[in-house]
Image (tube, rainbow, N blue to C red):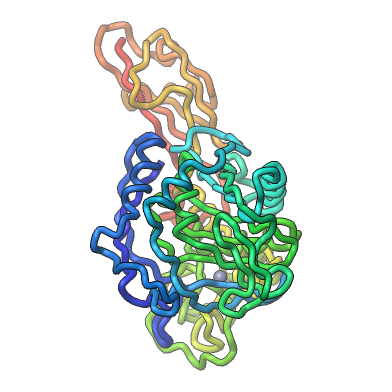
Length: 460
Ligand SMILES: [Zn+2]
């Protein structure tokens, strides 16, 4: 489990300034990896959200509150767009207490310990007490559709999926089907947010409190109980729980899952948008930090060994070959994208090759290639057994005091004595290492994420 302490920047508008480098702004997070229990994480989330002088008191007038950038989607095959909405006000202690007492947390998919997996948390909004089973069904269906898209399809074993119940007074969400419809729901989901019909906003402070109920949240998807097409991406949230972004999507629209997949391109893949608005002029800023946008042409990328030069000329799953296609990062000119039309440009498409590489690297930032049934902090008996579960296709290699026990290569259950730990009464170290064998990640700095290593102390 990761706990992230974030510096709140709520005092100023976080809107994208025109002419600044593209990409999603977020406060620089201070990451602290800590092996702590779920109860502590929940307690931290509950206490750390208090204003504590860092954030100004919430203004009653939404227009006076800081702006929150969101991305929205005009239609299933359309280009996304960006706007800003008033940021959610911090929760009062009573509201946090009542959320902590609301609804259950149900594991929908369990592949291993939360510390070793990418934990996806679905939260339902607009479901009454009697409709929570409908929410679970919708969350399962949404996850199935999200993981039909590559590279999710090849990496489902890296994920745990949780459903966090939120009990709403009313069934359905506000703004469905028309703007005048107002419903009382646990998370305040509403279409027609900022007068944009397909923009499904949510109270992000309440999302944070609900997400804290799951054992670990690396990614949060809020399902608004509706069949109306719509959703939103919040990629600038600073979460005390530690997740990278919030996506909202309507529960019962069979194309809204693509919204969530696109949003994870930002949150997990750290990818930029590959679309433009056509009216932004020519980009003249510095080289973008995201891996899928560049000011360079194909020849310059190749000669300078920058960005996606390793993929140039390769056939891409979204169609065509990888090159330098002009337009992206909201600019029509001055920025190039890797392919003509990936999912980072248009919903319903595939990730391109550089996008897949970034997504797989993102998965591995949260999840390990290898998990074990004995925690690494726990000493092993020489006569004991140890079982590991590698990612499909990965080969475990075993080492005693740094020397490989070659006969055990590929074994998933081993005994330290059989590996060669001597019965000499001294302390020894058993190590197992495995690497995701994918060839879809070429950048050496990302390839290092594909290897997991676990070690135990054994007394001989
Ligand atoms: Zn986007």
